[in-house]
Image (cartoon, rainbow, N blue to C red):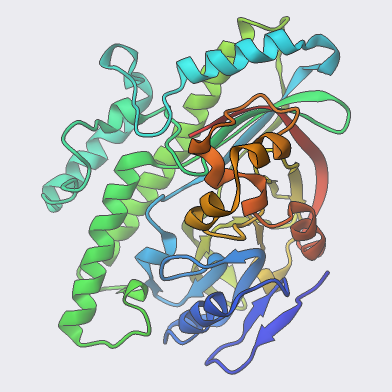
Length: 398
């Protein structure tokens, strides 16, 4: 399905791949389109919903400027998935329950981190020198990180919220492992620091914005290059974080399943990030706020919610979406609203057949709080083609 609607009463058009968008999100998209450096148009994916400053599910191409809050505080958040050489006929419910326990033991979730003895120091080593350099330039950089938090110990940990680790079966009953996480506390600290610097810059220059979270850095300004360096550092950290967790999960699976190998189908992609790309005749900065890159041939992962299907896709390279697609189902209601609307009984029903937490602590992640992933996929048939359809049998939430 092509673009469903266009907001034309803005300085640049906003092209939206769904009719399911609320008024607050429309206004947020219009606010983005009013920025003086937007390139060509703003694209909103079919999972679009309200965010902080920038709408989640938006793709924002900018000329010589970046909005740090549009990139967000979970810099480099994304997905990794791999297909295994074994199928459903080699699984048992007993083994899957052991896998759930093993993953929960091996991969710290929520605010937890690895103990010093288990810290992945070798994987963290390449990041150390650049971080020290950034801290010398910006001594207050890690003020929000927390005294008990250690960025080395957080490498290979899941985090909270909508982050998850899943064991899935595809349309041929082949086993997959898939997980969702980002740059953890260190990425949040870097983002929060530069978001605040951008706000102060706007105040200093007396620039009036429709939303203070649209504060930006222009190329050549005092902090632009430092922010780009920090955001690229965090994106690489997030990518490595997912790889490290995948290694831990696969090692855990080897303890409870017959011998297996990982096939060539491995995907690791960001969906909260900024990159330099060429679109509509110009080299620009592209911020994907809850969207994946979907150039022709690009592999991507579009998860549903716990209890819903997920998809491995190949991009079609649609220029109108800036070679992008949806990053997931997208929330239909806030976490607070979900907790008020649904019960533990609803959670049990909606996650039937999945080994996962089914207590009130994860009701805010219930499938009913999210948009219909199949409708999202139908709305973006011009952006991606489906290669594999996955259904989880184990889900570990952050």
